[in-house]
Amino acid sequence: GNSVTQMEGPVTLSEEAFLTINCTYTATGYPSLFWYVQYPGEGLQLLLKATKADDKGSNKGFEATYRKETTSFHLEKGSVQVSDSAVYFCALKLAGAGSYQLTFGKGTKLSVIP
Amino acid sequence: ETGVTQSPTHLIKTRGQQVTLRCSSQSGHNTVSWYQQALGQGPQFIFQYYREEENGRGNFPPRFSGLQFPNYSSELNVNALELDDSALYLCASSEVSGVTYEQYFGPGTRLTVT
Image (cartoon, rainbow over all chains, first blue to last red; front, side, top):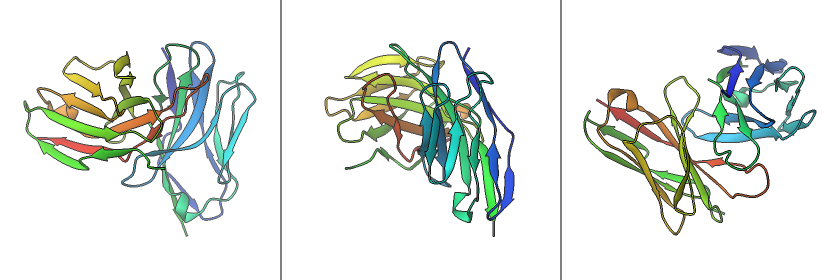
């Protein structure tokens, strides 16, 4: 079946540190890949996405590249801020007719300290 | 443009009772999906509605049911509540277009079953 595996959290970083959150996936076919962010007490917000191999999604300084050969979609940011503290979810969605759902990883909690 | 809204924000029910959660889709969106997010986990797909018909279902029992109305608002109904139904319930709306359609999430309803 389809699944997403994220690195275990929590991750604690100092402000301006480099961030990497690993995400690998298993899927039949060619999925689209997403990173969602959930701030405390809120729903999920789409952070970035990539729809085909070698695509790079980017937003708010975050980046992730769709690597088909390693089935990965690692999230990176060069310099984190305290306001980036949140839970980050990697997700996939199969393309084509009949594909309804997002399949999420368990989430990685990021805490950024001043 | 109004985003996805959900009501109520929080709800406490007793085991065996029934509950109805509501979602108002983002303007122009004709598809709504419901997800269950247990504490510390990623969201799990419950089902999706497209133009008032169920369009796909995850691995949830029939006591989880839904409705979508002509104005594309939606309800999630859960009968015979169990303790394990305690979770954050997320609604996401989207406009079906192209191969991938982006889902916009509401803030969720926190359900506690005692």
